[in-house]
Length: 209
Image (cartoon, rainbow, N blue to C red):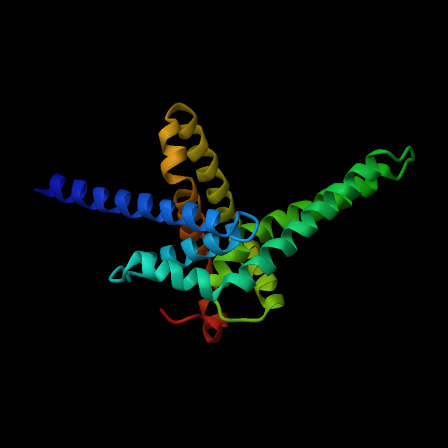
């Protein structure tokens, strides 16, 4: 009976994640990808936040659409702001590589340091967006603080994402069925554990269910 209970719960979670992945893919395509990817990402994270907090009694489709619609503009603003920073850093790194001067190494060191910082903020900014009700600059601040206080969880996010793709290499079906929901769930799970560490200082910003 105990094993049957575990199997039942596992089946439920697999079904939820598979369905969520379909919604993530469908709404990304509906938004023609360049307008739909970031709102779909945000909606998936918001759904998974509810699951992690124990709220699972809602219509998945209706809640996804609500999150997608309500966060459409802000999610794209955050997403394309980060994309702009990444492109800007890439262009500057390529330009610095073409410089034949002794301070090239110093500039590259600074640029790669900034690139690392942007990557860390990118990991946490969407989980903070669905968890907190704050201003744009606050999401960047929260993302940085969470990364600062939880380097171990940041490492676990990266390790689990690598493990996901490693398993997906040998079982490609996993990539197709769980890419969106699987990667966002990994990120949201560990991000939420990190956000609980600063809950006392940020409780006023936390969104209701």
